[in-house]
Amino acid sequence: MPQKVNDKKDKAVSPVIGSILLVAITVMITGIIASFVFGMTGDIQKTHIIAVTVQKVDKITSEHCHCSCCAMGAVGLVFTNHGGMDIPLLKNGSDAFTVYIDGEEIAPGSMPLMNNVGSSGVYESQPERQHVVVKGNFIDGTHQVILDTWR
Image (cartoon, rainbow, N blue to C red; front, side, top):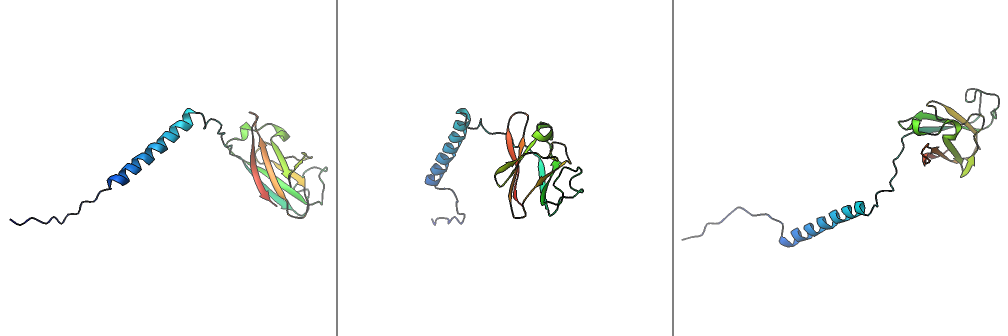
């Protein structure tokens, strides 16, 4: 009696590949569990959400600074606090932000960047391109870079 030819092809993963996959999955799960058990994930801090922008101006005018104590006519950087959900977590007043220009901390002047949404801070600058960093200071004692750019 003639044998029937089976046209259907059986597709399956070979036992070797299956064993390798099972070992790989077991190692991954073991690593994840070990990281939680040994506390490797405990030092991760929450990222605060706050938006600050900076604009370089050729001349500081009364449009940028509303007091007479700014260096009128000087090149300047105008920082604006656009808010974010973590604004209430910032320190109060001029302690909310620290401004660095080319790695040097700039002391808050007559118009520092404040924790109020919409507030602007005016800082004297140089005409050439500068590295600008704004760090947020929070009431829980943590700090976070909010802005890091070149202007």
